[in-house]
Amino acid sequence: MGTSNIYAGLEIGTSKVCLVVGEARSDGALRILGVGQQPSSGVRKGEVVDSETVQACLHEALVRAEERSDVEINTVFLSVSGAHIEGLNTRGAIRIADGEIGPEDLDEVKRKCRDVKVPPDNGFIHSIIQHYYVDGQDKIVNPVGMLGQKLEADYHIIHGIKTRIQNSIKCVREVPLEVEDIVFAPVASAQVVLDQEAKNRGAVLLDIGGGTTDYICFVDGAVVASGSVGVGGDHITNDIALVLKVPLARAEKLKVTYGSAWLEDINPNEKVPIAGEGSETVERLLICQIINARLNELLTLINNSLAFDNILGKTAGGVYLTGGSSLLTGLDDLVSSTFELPVCRTGYTSMSGPTALFENPQYATPVGLIRYAQLLNEQRPRAGAISKIGRKFEKLFGASR
Image (tube, rainbow, N blue to C red; front, side):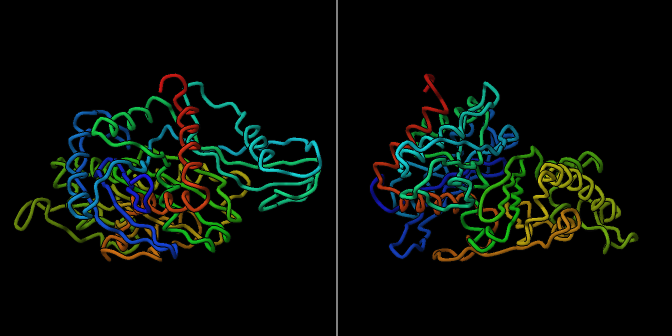
C-alpha cells in the first residue's frame, strides 16, 4: 500500500471511529473504495482516555473497511483533535548569500519561522506557508530562482501537547497499523469542504463533532487561524439530560427530533413528549433554549478567538459547517447571526463512490485525509514524503520516539 495510489484516512472521534479507503486517480479525482465505522468508546473530547477500548473499536472499523474495500490496510493518515491544539502566526527572515534564491533558502527561512516559543510540552503538527516576501515585494508564490537580498516568510504553526498525540499514535500502532502522517482534523476537512475560490475569498470552517469543535480560517488563500474548543454535540445532549433528568439516549433523541439552535421560530406553547407517546410532556422551547445556550457559548468563544486583525472582515466566503453535530436544526441561522457572515454548505467534488458518504458532513475529516494524502503525494516524490514525515515525527516526539 505504501507505493500505490490507495490511501486510508482514520478519524478517532468522540462519537465514532471511522476508517475510509480511497484511490487517487491520475486526473486528480478520488474514488472511495470502502468505509469502516464503529461507535467510539474510550475517547473524551477528541482524545484517547482508554487505549484498550479504542483499539477494540478501531479493530472493528478496520475489519469492515478491509472487507468493503477489498484492500489490506497497513498504513493510515491519522487526524488529531483536542482543545490542547493551537495555532499561531510567525515570520522569519534570512539574507541571500549569492543573490539567487534556491530551495535550501526556503528550508532555512522555514526553520527561522519554526524558531518560535511554544509551551515546553508541545510539538509542531503543521508548519503551513502563508506568503513569501523578496526584498519587500509581498505575496510571492514561489521565490525559487528569483534574485534578491532578503527573503521573508509568514507561516501558520499548529502545535499540541506531545504526549496526547503520542497516545493516539501508540494506540493505532498496537492494532497494528503504521501512521504515515498526522493531520489536524480541520486541515483535513478543508481539503474537501473548501475549494480554492472559497479560500481565496476568505472562509471559516467549523468542524462540530461530538466532543470538540475544531476550526480553521483562510484569508487570501492562506491559513491565518486555527484551534479547537472542547465543546461538541455530546455536551448539548448532556445539558438536556441534566435539565430534564432523562437518560442520555433519550436526551439525544429529544435533541435530534425536536431541538433547534435558533429560537425565533419556536412556538412557546408547543409541548413534546419526553419519553414517547402518552408520556409526560415538556415545552419544546425549553429544549431549544438549552441547545441555544450551549451553542452561543461555543460560537462566542470561537468568534472572540478570530477577533484579531479583523479576520472576520476578510472572510467574504462566509462560514462553512461540517461535522456530525453541524446537522442540528437552526444552526445555520445562529452561526450567521453570531459571525455576521453567510453560512455555506457544500458537497465534495471530483469524487466517486457511495453518494451518501459525500453528502454527510460527519465524514468530511476521514475523506479529507484521503485528499490530503493525494496532494502530499503530488507535491513531491514518494521517498521525499516519507523522509519528511519522519522528520516531522522526530520533531514531535524527540528522543522518546
